[in-house]
Length: 226
Image 1 (cartoon, rainbow, N blue to C red):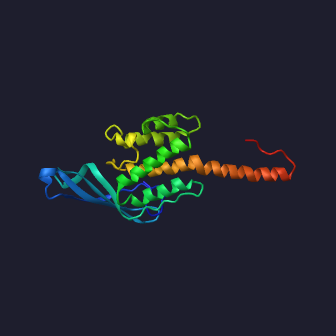
Image 2 (cartoon, rainbow, N blue to C red):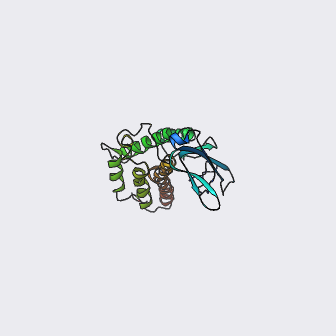
């Protein structure tokens, strides 16, 4: 995950404190706080999770844990610190920052915004339009110039989001529906990579070409084509 304090990609090993709900015998549910410090900035990150409460007994200790997580949210820090470069069009930058802002409050709302941004970019920038997001993703990853790391990341959205179980994610991308554990964060990560590929690097390359052509022209040499 990306640290919500410093935005550096890190691997956190969350310690845990898990409790059973009062009506665990009827519902089977429990909840817990999971926490760790970012190895880069030392910032504290706290997750709240709800799922099915389990107890594992051994000869030496009792281990309680959650499985089949139904809810996972960052409760500290309350805001997610992600930057968006100026090369990204305002329409996407605004919605992306909103998806970041609501993530600690509602992963479902954040994911809905991110899915809508993804589909908008595929349709408007890459001119891929179909009846479902899954099909549009398929056509995107088939493009020849898409790097493998990005095609694999975008393709994983369908599996991580469990489109088969939540068809509205596929046919009505802006719908607020249940999300899988880590899905909302993954969507934000993928969008950052897509922004870089679609907008940031092409714009910076065009600017470098412009500067180089000006130098070549001043030296009386032919400019770069394309």
